[in-house]
Length: 144
Image (cartoon, rainbow, N blue to C red; front, side, top):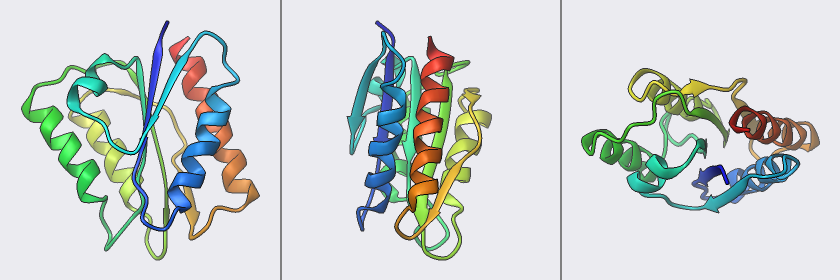
């Protein structure tokens, strides 16, 4: 059964709300195992058939946990080429982190990017949560 790895970081709980909505959307596709985790390893990235990363923006950057994961995966030469990938996240002022993540996934790891990036300023509203569900569904369909 194909696997979708959905990882996220959160400090205020806003990105976690978004992650759960992405998971709901992905669950609409049958025949897909979904792993929702706060953290992941490079090997989990390698073994997944698709990856979605939820990352809040702090001081105009992604969180250190997500940055470290991507750096470790690069150092281990993890192959992710052509796997579907997407990103989402909350922010207070700028919102760059999910876009930074996608840039790395696309340019370094040659993953197939599923857009759009879903952003929510502070706590996600119903529209942002629905956009998250749609993102989860799109990535799940891309895997299957």
